Amino acid sequence: MAKNYFKSYIWLLETLQSRGPQTLAQLRQLWRRSTVNEFGSDLAARTFANHIEAISDIFGIEIVCDRRDNTYSIVNEEDMDGTGIRAWMLDALSLNSLLNESAGMKDRIFFENVPSSHQFLTTVIQAIRDNRKLKVRYQGYRMDEERTFELEPYFIREFKRRWYLYGHKDYDKDFKPHMYALDRMLEVEILPDTFKVPEGLDAKAWFQSLYGVRKYDDMKSQQVLLKVHGKQVRYFRSLPLHSSQEEIETHRDHSVFAYNLAPDYDFKQDILSFGDTIEVLEPKTLRTAIKETINQLNTYYDDEQ
Image (cartoon, rainbow, N blue to C red; front, side, top):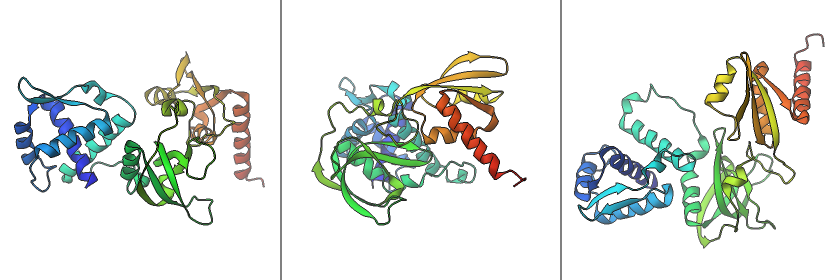
């Protein structure tokens, strides 16, 4: 049912954005003809009001009525073109709606599968929205046995085709966010108990210097300089590695990009994935770590052994 509601929310937003202000009667008529309306149901006034409230809660987009002509429109329409979770959800759900309506294109459009979004993502988002605790049955890859605990969900993040939930576990002494992978959750249940997000916890600031998914107390943000060669420069310009990316030097055959982040394991792995098109200039510790990994790789491919 939640999935069908999401499709209805997207339909309503897209209809108002493309057609402009509409009366409820006009929207009801359009809804009856929509392919999203699988069962041919009516858009009742109460359902419509609930949709408006849910869209405000989930997407932060306000739909208001102009009492002069009783038309509904989007107040902060510019937010639909923003970044972050709102834009991601709108893009992802709009694509899902489009694909459902265009079944004949299923063999012509391909995208990466994100398994962890299939089962628990909607439940987790609802709990975050309502500040409700979760009961989670969980088994990490390094855990011999599964565990069941209560969790206060603070925020979520997608990284490399996996979703991660950050929150406070019931028996943790501190209230710092800890990471839990959705694909390692075996069962998730929303509890009636509510919670308050710790005062001063800013998710955007918390992630600011983070590249991967894990954050440790000893991780410190520092300047990282990467020398990018050849046509790879265009790739970096079009899709930055990190939000702090800045091109500080531009030459005919290479550019230098600067970052302000904590170079963790995931960052090192991604740097190595670009092969000989990237050279770490700073910091020296990262440059040395990359060099040691390359030397180790050379031993694996040394035919003289």
